[in-house]
Image (tube, rainbow, N blue to C red; front, side, top):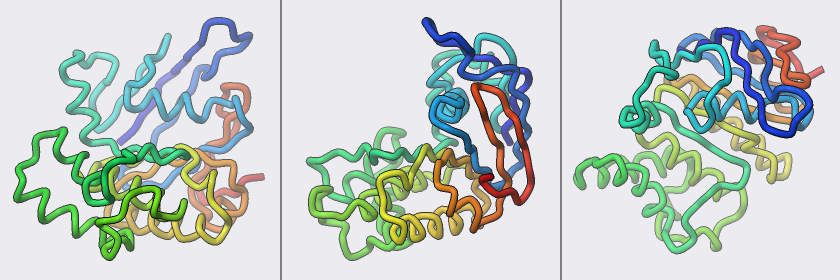
Length: 226
């Protein structure tokens, strides 16, 4: 599903590459944690997968395609297969829960009758079926993150990328978000999640890819944070 071959990414002004000669092979349906200190390369790893960044060297395959060879007009099609969740939610403040989730389908041209069916279903899945008419400022942080996850998953993507999705949440709320991501993973969606949360990683015991100063220093099935 995801493959990195000798991938290096450098940013101007930095002493070391953000990612250095990275190799990884992630199968369909896996749940993978990316761990490591700030600046270790976790966010760069994620941004490379949906072509927010381009590698300086190496190749990246997503869903069997060498994304480095994709023409620019095909990038939106790639991103339809990739949902993304962030630490800061990135919700539209003047739109309701329903409208925020609907927007993800509107931008890819889904017909109105499909949106009308899929949005309530996904809101129910994330536990917000009774808050579809609420605005982001009327929701707790955990509820806002659930909206973000609903928006990322409403198109049933092959891959869900999550960059510190529990970073702004209290521990109990974070557990609820992880249960939701686990449920989504069990539908067959591949989940790649960058996190600093040792407790979550140690509890879930999924595959762990650890980065340090741009290098992959550990790749362990059913790992812990360490």
